[in-house]
Length: 120
Image 1: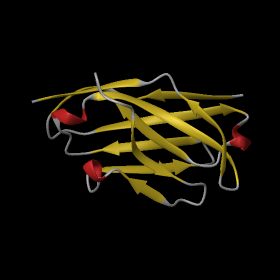
Image 2 (image 1 turned 180 degrees about the horizontal axis):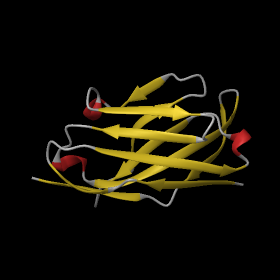
Image 3 (image 1 turned 60 degrees about the vertical axis):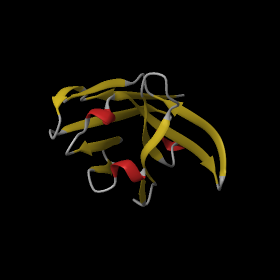
Image 4 (image 1 turned 90 degrees about the vertical axis):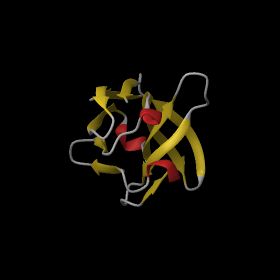
């Protein structure tokens, strides 16, 4: 099993910054790609940013240029630096880890989520 624990959420004014952290433990050797998803009230969960084991990244168009995902494999931690936050970034943010065999997804692992609220 893999456990993912997020931290760093909170309340911030528009234009401010937050950094989310996600610490992985357990059978972390299973994890390939990691990422951050978010879910706002009444909306579907969506991908925010993802990073592979080799460091390749991709971002949702809505956060490009404002958010940066990074990964410290020695600490088994993935980060999401969020700058120039907007009220529409308000959501519960979830850390995700993927166990893949080649291109086949074996299992998704999820953290418990952390609330990010951006006031206008």
